Length: 192
Length: 81
Image (cartoon, rainbow over all chains, first blue to last red; front, side):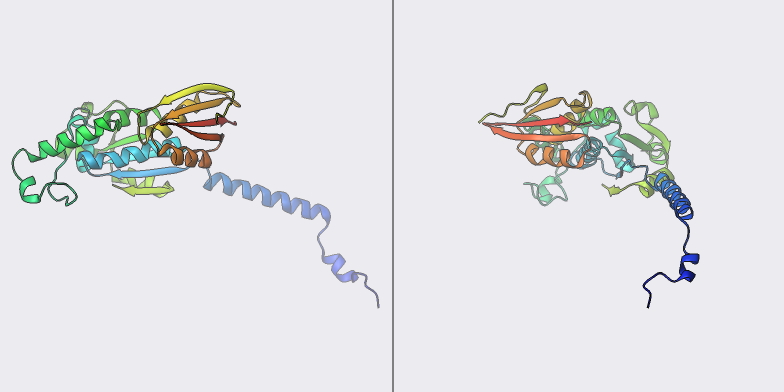
């Protein structure tokens, strides 16, 4: 009994040259797939919808930090989130104690005239004492790091803002479709 | 115990809090050349974990050491590419 490979299968086996050609073909295909799917840059997409002093921080902190991690970041600002990008309004964002049971003021007291101003002052002092970056500083830093801030065109018109009132470098003339496209391509998507 | 590296630049972010230590570290590293070492001085205790995490998931940087010196947290980051 022979242990030699039977002649029949030797004939069927592809030649070395054929194998080499096949490997090359597969390598090309792999390179194409890699080129399509993995532009290796990581992306993050944030939708910022809130404009209170406390809610303005998370999108900006996450955006600038993600940029430091090498992410390509877009933040789409809509409704009250637009105020974060509004140069004047961003400097006077307010905080309310009403509806926030963690605040040291009962809702009935928080609803009194002047209370929002007081809680805002209190928060501003905490921010200053802790040397937490201001909203303006976070926006400027994020822009420097390449974060793209988008101002929803529909809400700009709804709120009656002028495009010139936003920080330099803010993208206007964009809508939900742009946000969806960014989210579809992103590795991280957040709604704040 | 003092750690000595051939420090090229020192970034002083004492007083600054999250996210500034990491964000400014990244900007400072971008200004350096391959092989150079950045020293970061921070008082934010979160910077120990934050800069460690940042260096771990960021290509082209290597965290050489982190030292607590009194109130100051010192970080040494080498640019590797």
